[in-house]
Image 1 (cartoon, one colour):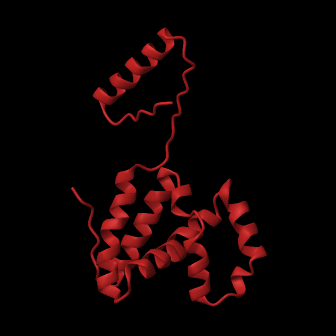
Image 2 (spheres, helix red, strand yellow; image 1 turned 180 degrees about the vertical axis):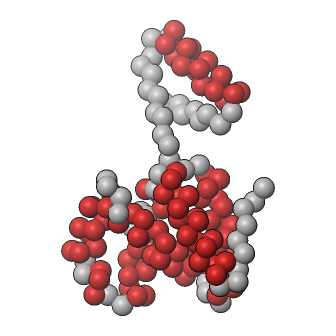
Length: 143
């Protein structure tokens, strides 16, 4: 099975061509359309993590856990689809009664940001920017 992504008009035409070729050969064609965030959105956060790490004197893994815990989890917990499942898992593990460090370690192993829609990931990045701007760290987007 081959996978093609559409990013621009040329890649769109390549996907259409691949679908046509497959249909002519009698192959079953599957097309998945998603509104999940782009790699660019996720990559942007990874540009910010070392800056936050230096600013706060934390390691990169510590910052990753902190961001997922402080900004990502609250978004996911209120999601109609994923929220119920995440809240169930957290309740069963006694999450609310754990020390902060243990909570962050647990969140590190849960899919948080990868479950976000584009809108949720935008909210996540906005929350990070606003929080750190208030502390004096300006996190800008790459052009």
